[in-house]
Length: 123
Image (cartoon, rainbow, N blue to C red; front, side, top):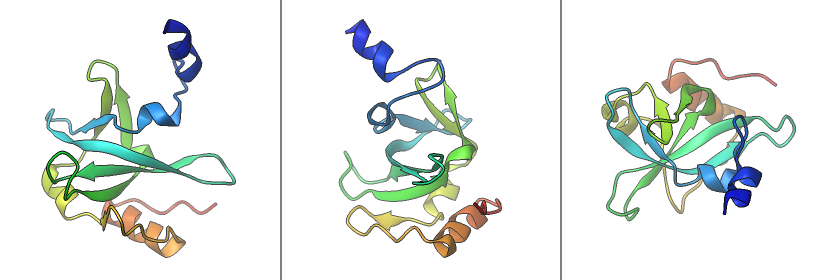
């Protein structure tokens, strides 16, 4: 078991399957949801978004909310990620249904990043 942990997580790297399902909190210690998946740029290898699963009951009826990856920080004490947004900000954020994934175009990226007051990175 320890061998598996060492291979899928280091002090700086983590396997994507360990990120999915990880809790996301705000600074007030409210759980906002869990990470459904991570969107990674094919060319740079950089994570662009953490897709937050929020709302519903036991994952049913929940929506997906892309959050720029750089907004999250990992908190070892919580065993999860922290993002400085409120539940109200999440509910008003760009989102999509579980079966309705958008095309992650530059235009869509500018909408998501703009919602959080960030400039969309030009690669």
